[in-house]
Length: 480
Image (cartoon, rainbow, N blue to C red; front, side, top):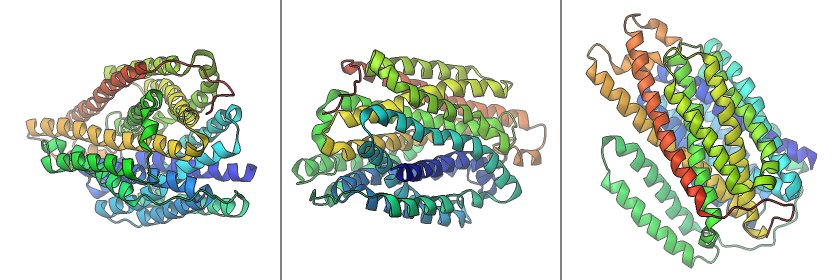
């Protein structure tokens, strides 16, 4: 059991370091490939593929077993990472991130499901907290490693780190994880999977196109396939997403909160390194450390949330954590070009604690609100909401960011998009004329604040959603 748990921790570390290093290296990638306008696609396409595949993997984990699905996910992720490392342009990188995302869709939800299988509820919260601690370890290593790689080697190497880690985890699970044969027979819900995939793809494309106005084709596809998905799932013999689990008001609310808060997480972790390099002029090796306290405090929040839930209950816990996030977001909106680095680290401390508490609590609550035979599906749905929230919000953030910057560049005839591509990288910014740098930084800051205004709006909505169910405290007997 301990070796399998170690393998799960390795996969968590692998996916965690991937996200942090990509965020750290993104300004360099953008400057190298001249792709500021496509920057959000590198993240959003990865998240979309993860979101699309997560429900299918959750269902397969309940049907054919956790082990084969987990191994398949690790292998696909490793292959996708290797291909990303070979990318020579932005289009190739985006295409290979699709493969990486399809592997990621299996890794995290199935890993959490395996932990649920191996540990009782009282110890499960601690193990999920320990699993989250590897995000903290990754957050310390990734900025240094990412900065070293982009400055001394090439950004292509940030993806190769996943290959040895993935192969080690694959071998450990293959050899040491023994699970009983799953006798649960199920028919693969291909119609449900296909309609959900088209629905989510249409949603992402619709959000990406909003910058240019409402795209009625994508909106129509969303509506049509949403209806088709509901009809298919109602008639399916073994649906990929049993709709009855959404009838539970608390289950629905908690997962909608997961969707929103996960989107806020990606907005903070993805854009703060850009703020540090582009506005503050911090080097790539240091910029990523602005979000490191968030990852470290995520661990603390994950560890302590179990005790908090047993004392004040799920609803009150979420209310308190939302207030922390709202105040932290307001602090970002009040920041200026001259705000020192340590202030962002302090904001990250509060954000991280609340992020860790909310996400971990939502995982546990989603599992105990369903029957044991639906734990895989519930975990998969919770993970789907996490990635769907990140996919949706990174698209929304991209629209806010690009539209604000585009309008301000158009209003300043001495500036252009090529200059903006350089200002986001502290290293590339040295090539710019000194007289345009203050203007470019002011424009960049405006775009970043547009992102965090968006975060503030959705956090208030999330707090309102949290009021629709009754509070209850967690106990060791809390499971259907």
